Length: 254
Ligand code: IPD
Ligand code: CA
Ligand code: CA
Image (cartoon, rainbow, N blue to C red; front, side, top):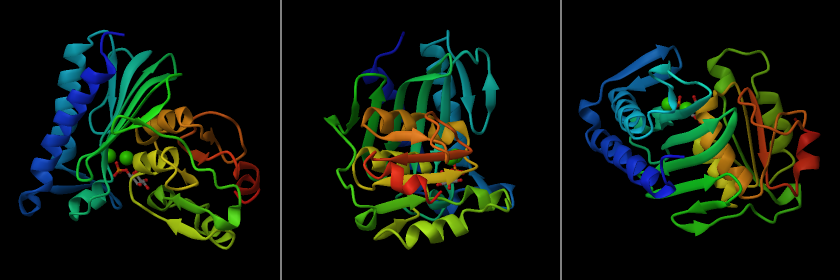
């Protein structure tokens, strides 16, 4: 691998500086709609252009798949990038958004980085080497009683106008748990499970770039990562991530 985890952090943090420049000048931020409920801003485009240029120059052997520019070159070994995850939150001046960068080789996540510039939190993981937040090791929560848990979800399915739109599932799970959150950045939701801040996260109708880095970080922190039927793996259209202790119980509610 022709890039170190430290070199990647410097590149992702530089991308964060570009995002913050736009974030600190929202009155001049151009916000457009890709679809009725899906936004893209000049910041998304600028951050992705920087990451694509910098990562492909540093590692020409890897391809690139970014949410805004699509897939280019080698898709066997590629960077999978969401330049700003939580664009709606970003556009309204809220702090809960992130930059998500993963290196995928032969359909396996090797490196993941999720950076929340407005919170100055940097999450990272390398396959088989654990998960880290701001340079310190992180692990999932120890909560084993579903009734005492805090869970998080999202509603990408509403954007897709799906009939299974997560509202009934949310209602079932909300009645069996103590706290429920909709933070607005799936990449960060996954890191919060990794960091033990929430005990489970689930969402439908995401894309690989939303979850690639965060799912590796969660796995390396000891989380279960499955679909809604309990099949192990990263399934962006049906992702369920838990601290493991409540996995069996919450699976019955999916
Ligand atoms: C969105 C966020 C949100 C999720 C949406 C995603 P975006 O990413 O991850 O939490 O619920 O489905 O699209 O569009 O801001 O990159
Ligand atoms: Ca996203
Ligand atoms: Ca995005």
